[in-house]
Length: 611
Image (tube, rainbow, N blue to C red; front, side, top):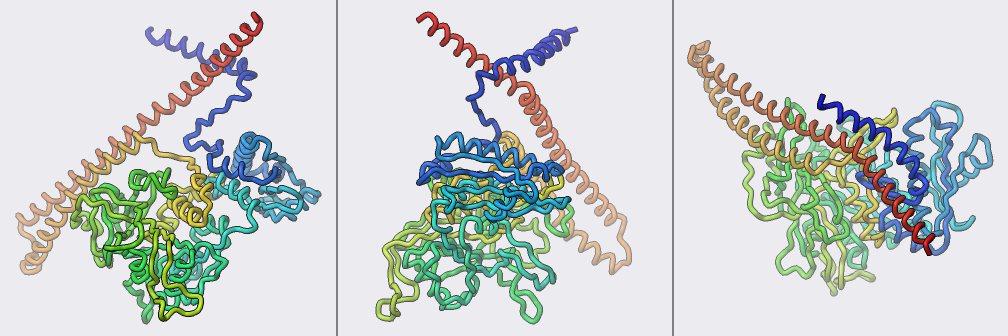
């Protein structure tokens, strides 16, 4: 009986809200509120700055083969989002941008135009090509195109559009030199005898820069490069190091990734056997610039460590060397890291300033106050990965994982008396960003492969790519694009993340207790096995000890499962509450906003009528 009034109220509300929203629609035409978690349908301040800097009006032409793409739900859905965002660009531009949407029919003049602008045709399950690209033109002679909106990379939508607008005002993209001993651009794997895929971050860098890959034995860095990116500079020749030194001294900007233990390093082959040397230090150059990578030391963190799935392990293992850095671990005052939510690293190193350095050392990424280091040699042929947590000794010191270095320096290789023509022995100021990890560039640390409506998606679940692009844009002078990075379609709620952290802490302590007991029992079993070999069989007491340990292990594992089950139930209850809020609360809020606007308009009309 008590439920009847509630049901009547909900039924009345369900009938009232649609009529209220339809009746108030004329008053809400100019009212826009982007309530999506990552503001997927809004433009950022950086985009507005780029639009204001356009020297003349720009026409945006969106080419989308609507009829040919009708069989692809994911493509049509993404096209609607692209068009909605472009309309927001047009609305916020105050007349600087105009949008035109073109549906190029097969063999039409519009299709010929699309091909002339360099747009790429998708190959669908039909003969007719499908175009889905954008052209920005300030006049018929000056234009830039985005050949294809990839469904797989839709998290970078605003960045790609704004980069296109900025490129329209530039003669060409900035030049970026790349020296890497890791397979960032793919290639043939000698161990597996297969082709490696290109790393996702390189595809994003290619859109923003004219990338020129340089050999590891290069002697001169070309003058047309604004930025140089070093990835795992391992055993570079003295001539190459000298060339890098001169590039930085004459004003070139440098982003360098060093690593005490690169998990992506396949190792050099010696007589068919991979080498254990997976470190890159760049000691000479870093020392000249006022910083150093702590030798053979890997960061382990009790607070930022995470559970990982390891080959041969029956369940996820907590690894203090696999780090998930939250926003509070990043420098909020530096444009490269401000606003980033999370970055994943693994087996990273420690950067620290050298005593008496003339440069300014600014940390960008840091560990928690519950971190320490482990010898990198412990990671070679690690029989029991769980032992890393048991052997970790921490301090209250926050360790620096990435840093910016600026200021006056002297050359590491050139003195005034031995300088060759055109070489510099010192510089008034250098600009270097150093990162003590190379694994953060690999797809496995920040990209999740998904499929939506049959289309492949590369969904970023961390800000690794954003961090790299922010650093490169900042070093090349394109600060407006920073902050336009990936708009994530899924975000963790703060309460859920806090609950997950609490559960992780409980599971970690229980797992450590279990591993400690397992270690003690392994020693007992080894002793029992030695005795059984002498006596041919175990005694009744020995068999009882084995049975007792087995029961104890099952009991602890049962407690861990109960904790995980309780955690999942808490998350599910929270999800149901949020679902109810979205279904009922948001329409009610919109209705109330519309009612308030209608009342305000009525009062204004009455006041005007009385006058």
